[in-house]
Length: 64
Image (cartoon, rainbow, N blue to C red; front, side):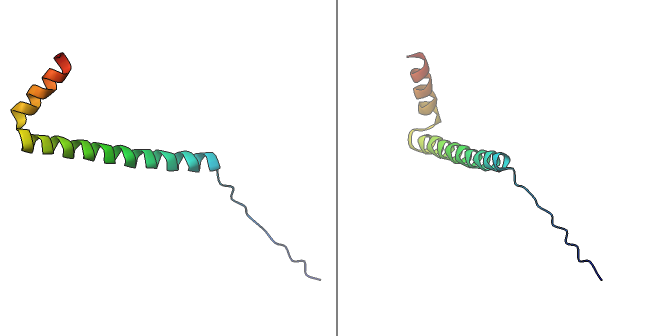
């Protein structure tokens, strides 16, 4: 008489690791979008007002 044996393997997902990896990825994408938007706004200010006026406005904002 033959005996049938079955081997099963289970892989348990680490939910905490997967969640933190996803959250880190979303945070990095959002930070990149904010940085790109900031550079676009700065470039727009350079085109509209000129670099010297942008620098003057920046210094005025800092120093009062």
